[in-house]
Image (tube, rainbow, N blue to C red):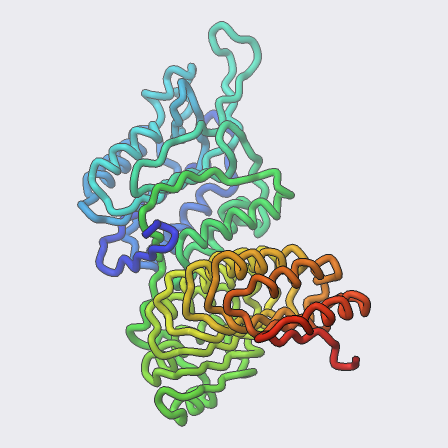
Length: 475
C-alpha cells in the first residue's frame, strides 16, 4: 500500500516540536513577521498536543543549545516538528539557519561556526529514530554580506539549496530552492506562506498531505505562480496532525438537529438538510448519526460544510460498514473538499454506494480526484455531479476511466454542467459504446446544441441496457 493511500492516526505516538523565530538581527535587516510566525505556530502545535519548545531572537550559543537539548529528548517513534523562521543562508551546498548575532559572521566560511547547519540538524533528528519528521524552514529571504575578501560590493547568500528528505521525513521551504522571496503579508501579522500554513495545519482530520497541497496551491495562486513552495516528501504514512477520532462529543448540535437524530431509527435514513450545519458540527454528526445510529442514508444538503468538514467525513468513511448513501449537494466543498473524500473511498473499505455532490463547485480538477478513486473503488454505484463547473475535459476524463478501469458504477449524473458542449458528442458515444457497468447517464441542460442532441439520440437508439437523459425539461 503506498503512502498516499495510508493514513496514520498517530494517537499513541509522542509529539515533539521545536519552534524558533528570529527577528532582531544585529547586522541583517530586522524581519517583521518571524517572531509572530513562531509564537503563533507554538500556540497551534500546543493545541494539537505537541510538546513544544519555543525560542525567539536567539544568538548562536542559544540556538545551538536549544537544538541540542531538543534532539536529546527525542525518543524512538516520536512525531517531530522542527520549524525555523528567520534568515537562512547557503554555502558549499549546505544550508544554515542564521542567529541574531550575525555580526559575528564576517565571511561565508564562518557560517559553519556561527550558524546552525540545517542538514546536520535533520540528520541528528533522524538518528533518534522518530516515526515521522516535518522539517519546515521559513528562511528564504535575501541575506547580503559586504566586504568579503576578493569581492567588491555585496553578495547575496540568502535562500536555501535543495535538501534531501531521509525516509520518514518531509522538508519544506516557502519557495523553490536557490530562490529568495520578500516578506509579503496578507493578514498583517505573518508572511504569505505562513498565513496559509496557519489556515490548514490544525484542521481536524485533514491529512497532512492534503494540508500541504492546499498550502502550496494557495501560495501559488496568491503569488500568480511566482512563488512555489519547495517540498521533498519521504513520509511513509500520511499524518493527521489534528486527529479527532470521534471518541467523545467535541461540539454540541443545536436542539432541533439533535432531536432529528434521536428520533431516527437505527440503520435508517437521517435527514439533516438545510440546518445551517458547519464544519464544527460534522464530528458530532459522525458520532451521533453514523457511529451510534449506524444510519444507512445521511442527507446533508444545503448546509455550510467546507473542505474541513469533508476531511472529517473522509475519516469516517475509511472503514464505514453501514452508511450506503451520502448527500452533500449545495455545500461549499469545491475541489479541495472532494479530494479527501476521494482518497478515503479509493481505499475501498467503505460500504458507500451513492454519493451526491451536486452544486458544490467541482471543476475538472475535482473530476481527476474522483476518476482516480473510481479506478480503485468497487462499491460506489451512483455518482451525482450535476450543476457544477465540469467541462468537456472533465467528461473525457470520466469516459476514459469508465472505459478502461471501472466496472461497478451504474449511474453518472453530469446534468446542468454548462461547460459540456457539442465537443463531447464523440466522447459520449465512445463512453456508451465501451461502457462496462454504466446503465444511466444524465447530461441534460448542459450546452449541447439541438443538432448535437439529435445526433446522440440517433446513436442511443441503437444501444440497449442504458438510459441517457439529454433533453432539457422545457424541450
